[in-house]
Image (cartoon, rainbow, N blue to C red; front, side, top):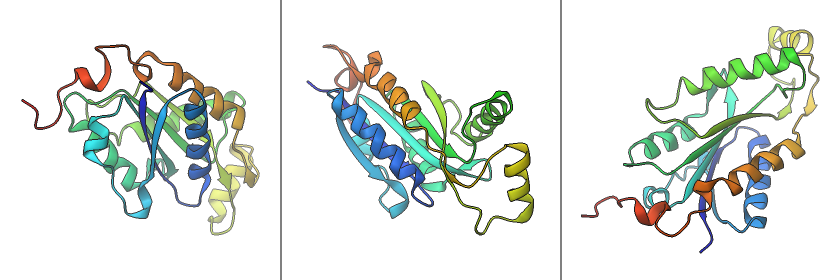
Length: 193
């Protein structure tokens, strides 16, 4: 049976949706059954779907070093499951890690984002990808920081090769490819006795 992966994401301007779509494509090509949902459109995560998943991938745009509220709500739903399915997370921010400074900034951003995750819920991996950066509406200090400290320019900073490589690791991880007796069938279902 094909592994069932729930892919949830919250976006502000569309960058995260593009990345989630590409992750879903890679997972499907690897033989996984993917159930995707955009959380910021008012549809919360489905607890039954989460409980029956072999693995869950959750992603969010990062604003002010934090995930968007709908994505954090999905993590709280996952944390309520006993035990939660294996979890992978991705964040989409303005910095595409490519040099020592931007890698350090990205690592700091990931640590700050994870402080907002429910206590005890730890993803197998949490990756930061660059998104689309628009200077319109960004305060002057933000534009200056981004330009001179992070070395960035406005535009599309999504690294599709990195996204596809990461999605490939999720698809081939043991928890995403359950063997008989593993996965959701081996986990108690909510309300099951």
